Image (cartoon, rainbow, N blue to C red; front, top):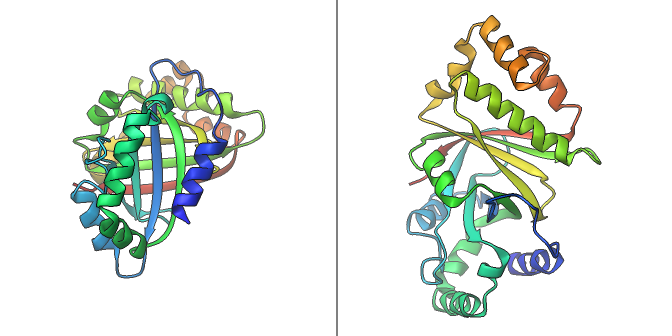
Length: 243
């Protein structure tokens, strides 16, 4: 079933990717392990994921749910671009790798209760690895936008990054839907640990308001209410690194 849904998503993707300068294509997989099988799936992550290295593809950047949404793991698979990923030689190598590792893929299927994929346009891989590679804690926000508000949501996320930058806080990586599951956009913020993530709450109110207004908001307390004028659904998840 997972293979069928993946093939369907590829077939239905837009002919042209989003026009984002310097964008890289990723497959974001949300996975919920079967009862009692989470450690089995994590072992597959740590081994490089079945049929990935042998296919010449990049191993996923992985994070494990701590609290929030239903998924156990978020796996971010770098793809480059559709043209690169679908190149005949790369596709043939991927097919050979999947055949050679059929047993591991069957083990993965048996260990999985639920999964969904969304293909997204995001920052260059080097930037993603620089932001997330040494992080131990993550804040993931996933959005479904109201009709006609996708560009506004992207702008709001950029404004919030501007706000964070002015306060010396980590910025979020922004990923925009190309095809697949219903999430229109999601962001990932990388932190050293939970204490680092909580540092934003220690900023004095006057300084927060000044940074928010400079970033284009009506004030720090207006950031959340404005966001909610753009979205139909919003999921927050805190996660930790899987290495």
